[in-house]
Image (cartoon, rainbow, N blue to C red):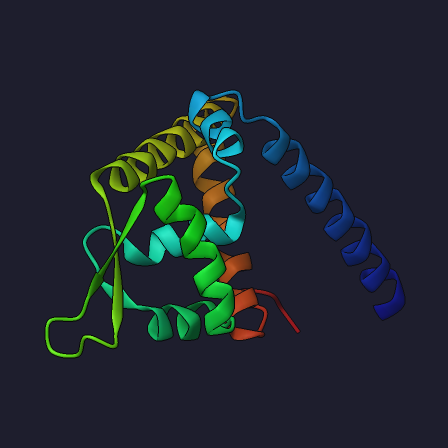
Length: 157
């Protein structure tokens, strides 16, 4: 029985990946086109989110948060400074430390991305009744909790 269950879990996991890919491919909003135009990757967006809304972080702190090397952070920030989404400034107490923060353009881009994501999630949920939306979100919450804790929640042994 465990083999059949694992096969079902594997099949369903593949189905979930296909569905998530389909959602990712459906990004008709102009903000996503702007990201492509600016040649920004997921790592660039992650860095922007770490600085939002008004954080100033040192390169070393960003490297630790992103779990990448400081030279990689330098490469990422170079593109973000060039596109005027991030600004560099010296630390007030230690001029050797470079602090990064969002510019107004960076905050605007993140705000627009959030609005686009919210719009897409609204469109996704509109296909479901209110009851089905609640069930979907409850199940998704349980799945996320299982992913975070490593222990299935609400499932009989």
